[in-house]
Length: 216
Image 1 (cartoon, rainbow, N blue to C red):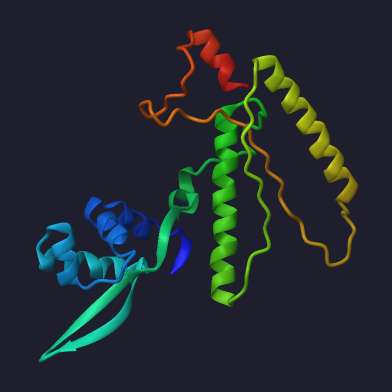
Image 2 (image 1 turned 90 degrees about the horizontal axis):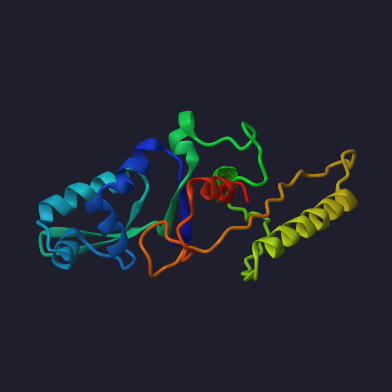
């Protein structure tokens, strides 16, 4: 079982978003048959069996083993991954494009960058999985608490200069056999987990303040 699988096909994304099927995927972190899942989820076995076949058809679950019980063969399934990410490729016609309106101070542009990151890394993972290879990657995850908006702006400016200097030092356009990598650095406030969706823990902003905040 993979830690994370990327869903790129629209039909597979639709299948994963069905409420019953998402419950089945979560339950199949531990292998189970239609009968076992029906007991766990409180659903009719026939309904579970139907959804299992659909999930298997889209590669979201796989057969783990077959158990013979008298004249009946019990099929035991497992999820193909512990968790799933839907790639923007599943909505190819309307996926965000950060090239369209680049703006370092826009939260929506940052979201578009994140969307492209999911798409590109997902494509790398899919290709590497088929070839039986690993993907070379690197990530940093850190938290920083600013005392003021001025400190945050100063941090962003210094970070921009540092990244630009590093890119300038190591980038070699003419390197034979070189491979181009993408560097993405993002900064955003952490949502308040105790609040409603979209809450940040900050006091409500006026319309003008909200528009300005989106650009920071």
